[in-house]
Image (cartoon, rainbow, N blue to C red; front, side, top):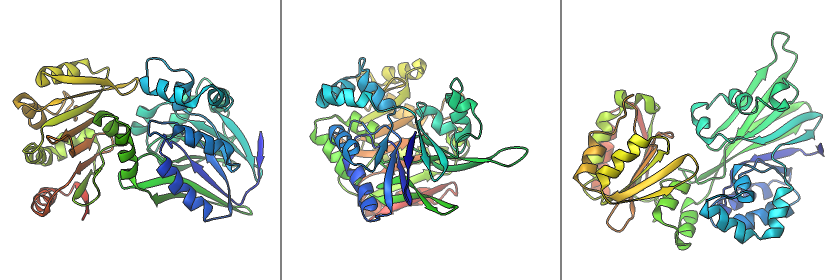
Length: 395
């Protein structure tokens, strides 16, 4: 048990090798001397090119209290993951041994309050269980004493990439105790060039908990990855669908309903948008679950010539040149038997393999890149036809 005394506490998760985002966070922390501790919930290693530097920083900066997440486990126990093997080689054996000494779960004591630090291994489940952190935690750790002890911890700090949430649960029926589960968001590559973290301020018996969003520069990280000669598949899959050349001319569209409502609300928008962007696109990439063998087969038969990559244990990516069969697939046959969108992610590239368009199903966000005034006006006219969409323009 670590005994910590501080006025303010910052909580972060999922740095994923992004030193630019970590520096943006530290700029905020360094400007507030009351923040004496940083609780790091793991997944600080990633494929952004700065894993070694981030590891050295968080293990020498005395403000950091660290646990490890799934990314660190993969580095310690690499299998056929080329990127993990590369990072392990970069780390060197002394750092690997040091990494093994960092726990995966930790309890800390703060102002007579008991905290539990842990990280979710269920990245996929975090989408479907958003706003239900308690149930995700209870299910994932059901075979451990952590989940079997109810209202033992005042705060459960639970790293789940992509989720920023503070949920309070009251003991029933006596209502004598409460526990708060916090997922701080992440310092990963964000759609709106922001980082997300949690700030806790202790003033006597009062505790203020705030989810903070601060600016960062996504493009710097993407440009760094490209300079490392990583292909477009890696850039787009690991760091989303960002306009590498700058924000100007970028249109971001957010769907207000999840993928299960795609057929009901978004068919017209999708078909008009994809017809428009296919005029300039020459390459297409898809991200799909490995278990969806039927969908993978359909893609390969349509593309004829394609490349295939394993993104992780659950997902693979298939990329190839656009032909008439692919155009038909994108514009007519994009829904599965449940009338949900078929692919977890799709991106379209021009002849020079610059990003034109991308869509992430689980986030419900599209991005159109490098639109001139005429193209921007046309896309806005499509969006205006639906009250189930919102958009943001970078000009």
